[in-house]
Structure formats: structure tokens, C-alpha cells
Image (cartoon, rainbow, N blue to C red; front, side, top):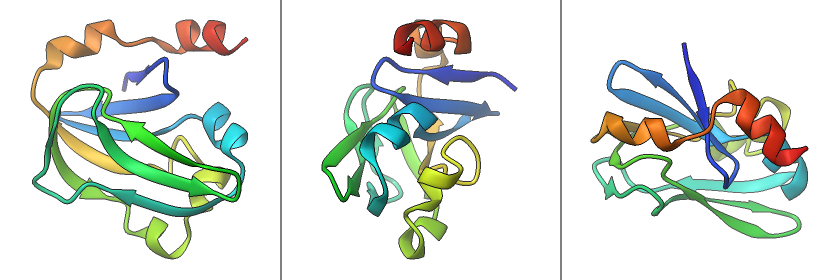
Length: 121
């Protein structure tokens, strides 16, 4: 299963035509402990680069941008009760939303793990 990354510190894992989206461990560490996470409503269409979710930490609020264009098809409901799950396991159980991918060609413009690691080094 391929994981892609953005320069804005989102990751996505594509499962069929659905992308599971979250923030990287680096972003979670930079933000500090999250106290609130909210995604756009299911059925909302977002273009690549649009805000798809918001996270708030004790330090700041940040937009989470759609790594690809698509339709929001899910939100990690566990985050409603426990937003710090993102801090504890940002690239697995702490996923934020799911998007039905509108244009798989946009994946080619994203970073792979090595390119992302080089960016944050």
C-alpha cells in the first residue's frame, strides 16, 4: 500500500478509489497536543489544496488541506472524543478523513516517503 505526502505535512493512503488522510508525525509534533479535530461534512466536494479539516492544539489552529480533489466520505469519529489520538498515532489510528478520489492523476504530484523525509530534514 503506497503512502503519499504533501509539502503541507498531510499523508494519504489510497485504498481503491478512497484516500485515507491525516497529518504526519512531524506535523503532530509541531502542533502539540490536539484538543479539537473537525472535517468537512460527508458529501462535501473539495479541490486539491482546499481546506478539508481543521485541527486545534493548545498552541494554534491549522487547516488540513485536501492532498487530492475528491468528495469527503468519512471522518474518524474517534477523534471527536479523543483528538489527541492524532498525536499518539498520527499515521494510523489517528487518521482524520476519507476522500473519494476524483483524479488519481494528482497522486503523481505528491511526495513519496523519501522525498518527504528530505523536506523535513
